[in-house]
Length: 352
Image (cartoon, rainbow, N blue to C red):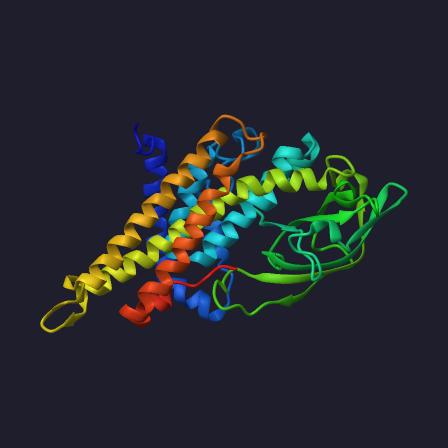
């Protein structure tokens, strides 16, 4: 079995790695400390045709598969977890639901600018009182003629204050549980849409995480994504792709932590030799490398089926790589920081 990337994927990997190291690396710490979303980076990603990697070419995307998308997410995460997080939220959550569930008109008006890199996307599911249990959602969308009026609060929404469109989940049939949830394409410039908080986090602060308030936001019925009640089915299918991208991002974060730890261990000397020569440190670094490779292979395996069909529901393999990669990322940071000092702590912020 051949585990190497296809030639086209390797070419994209080289392009993204070079871009990340030359354009993102020099400002990664600065944008994190300043809590600044790097608009210029995303503009350049658009110029490289990377803001819609898995979207079809006819819709403004690159026409790539999910393996290519995973490769891009990993390379961005390796240098900046914050850039990588906003990138995958834009692609998996803001763009692809419109591609997969939208009408031709919605795709042309809302998805194309996202795929071409002219705009940034977001989606809004989580609420202050409902996270995993989305059926407990309080945001409602009431029909009023040919419009819906949306009221509610959404919490921990990535990219909300820089987005040009937000996919908002709202209840259209109270009492119906998951079957009463629908999805709406909302323009943040509309009256009644307000970003009330941009959260100060433990890390990844160059990727904005926001609370938004929707107070009588009116959207035309042509902004309903799919049909009424489709929202939760769309969410489950969307999160299948999202799990792959977060697994790739976490693998990249772990790779960055590993490289920082390895380089530091070969530079720092104790007792007239590099600390990498000591068994405890060497074993730790080798273990990190092994676990990262395992996470990468799981991620690529999960991305593989999506090269064949974008719309089917993925089984357990889509969940496994995220758990493995996220565990690796946290474990590498936890293990390396106490032994190898502040350098590894500085380069490995944790997504929540």
